[in-house]
Length: 259
Image (cartoon, rainbow, N blue to C red):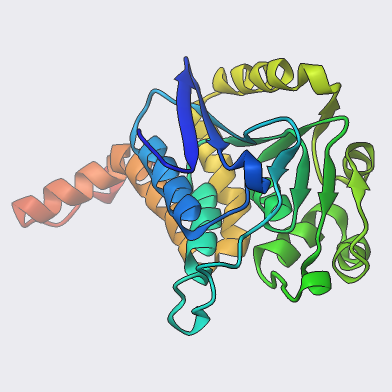
């Protein structure tokens, strides 16, 4: 897959999506958001990749949020929706997603690592929400998911006071899963991804759907029900007997359903 503002490569069962605007802190643009969404949707449709890693280019920034240029036309949702669709695509992806935080994760960049299933960060990484300082906010994923991770009081502190959170503090707070020395981030990320890749793909997909159903509303519950239908119910005696009875225009034999 060829992209302008991200890169993607596969290494066995691991796919790595890299935000590739290091000169601008790997900031989101509408184009980058669309490319991330399209890349993740492509990963969703193939079976080679069992774990997706998201990281930033360079060694200073994971992502420092969204660039305002090109995002002003909120009445038409021209700029707002690409970011939302990007976050949603991570939630919808049935495969585990690991954020490998290689530097500053600020604003939308912190939200990005939060919506990933797991986060591993290097020792010098920094996490921060800065919206109220610069005339912005995230009243969706950035608040609900943050509260789930660190609790309401700390989530409000991150939004109201905008402190810089070190990787060690983020680990203590529950904002991330693991901290490693800077030089070991790539190898530690690969080790985590390979470990997860050996787990049952259907089991992991079902667990992820269950976690996401609470925030996903009818959409989240529908995705979970849809997967249960396709991967479970259609193989049951009940399904086969009802389908055959309907096709043969006869009453079904309930004794064949199984319980």
